[in-house]
Amino acid sequence: QRATRDLDRDALRKNQIPVVRRLTGGRAVLHADELTYSVILPETMPSLPTNVIESYRLLTEGVRRGYRALDVPAEFSVPLTEADREALRKPKSAVCFDAASYYELAVDGKKIAGSAQVRHQGAVLQHGSIPLSMDDDVLFDCFNLEADEKVEAKARFGDKAVSLNETLGRDVSFDEVAAAFTDGFRDAFDLTFEPLVFTESQQEEIRQLVLKYESDEWIWKR
Image (cartoon, rainbow, N blue to C red):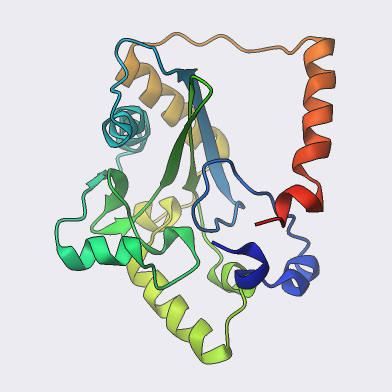
């Protein structure tokens, strides 16, 4: 995706929405009322499949069980038809949640979570977004679309994606969702969790990385 072509920078400034470019690539996501997660582990971990799609399915099991802890019947989406696969190869929209890819999670055919994975220098990163609610108007304001294109895209988006609040028919709190997904990952992988506290030297390294990754040179160079 070309950010300089697809995104409306004036609208982003008007809505006070900062832009970041993620290492996993893919189409644009509006991070707003949501829970996000990241999993980082070595490629050499014995239980991790070497196949990217299968390792993606394995790690996303923690997300699936998080939804189950909230009584949401989320299941893995697998594009079965050639038309579905073609839609992934040539998406109609610049919006990430417009279509569910291999082993992403869906409810009644609608994408409910978005995740992505990248492998680099011996490490695996998988991260994703679990929307509590979605504001379609703000989302589509972020893109360079003609008025008629925007109407068509919003109508199609409503048939393709769904939020947690909409699925449950009630408003959920961030803390409730965070607890459910903590339980989901604990259950899926038999984990124990310990809070991470960064040292001062690590904090300084983080500050230096922030300078790089929030710079216009990094964000808009593709």
